[in-house]
Image (cartoon, rainbow, N blue to C red; front, side, top):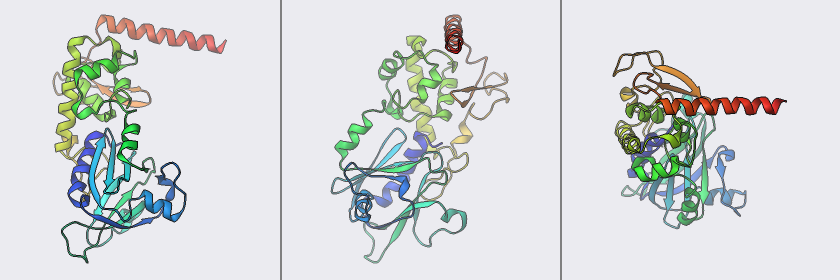
Length: 312
């Protein structure tokens, strides 16, 4: 599933092409992927308005895993990639075969600085349809929606992270996946950040020692930043705006490596399920302290007791 580095790299790759471009048309092949702004009629005109047709793109933005395209007249369109979504620029011939399938919206655009006859396309493609496009009437409306997200993970400060984690006793891995706690971290980079700081994924979030919060915030920023530069992690579907795969998988230390030796100590990496997510860690480099173990066991015991009581 694309996380912050994939979305940020996609934004950077498409930004030089669409900023300044005028969107002249949009071909909608599946309306179900589009969420209209409140009050917008579900008509051809309503979808044309939502998809920024007729506008000149002035900027792109990102918060967490969401990317936004801003038009000169104030309209904004948010792109969420879900698990398999992509935005792809089509300069010459349209794609064929499998690449031509699942293109739910196709924009025609006139790029800035090109001849009047130049017409390129870019398309939103999403085979599994977990992503989508959401229209907002203004950046003010979008900022209100984005205010429900936690601090952006690419520049997360230790103080902001500490304030969020202090409110929950959930395992730290689960807390990092919560977009209201920190925006942009998903399964891949949660595992990588916790390994980099020697924190066990089951450690209760509010029991992290204060001296571990600054290294964790720094690791999140560093690991995400390196992944952005590497073009993101292409596990299966992810590509940038020009169809290029990312190479960040080459710097993964634990994600997807359960059963393999730790690159630091050589101990076999363990894999568990946490909130239905595959979680990989090193039992030697990321051991639970005595107090953390007691807290985790107590929470598990309490949960089992509550379940038994509920069944009676």
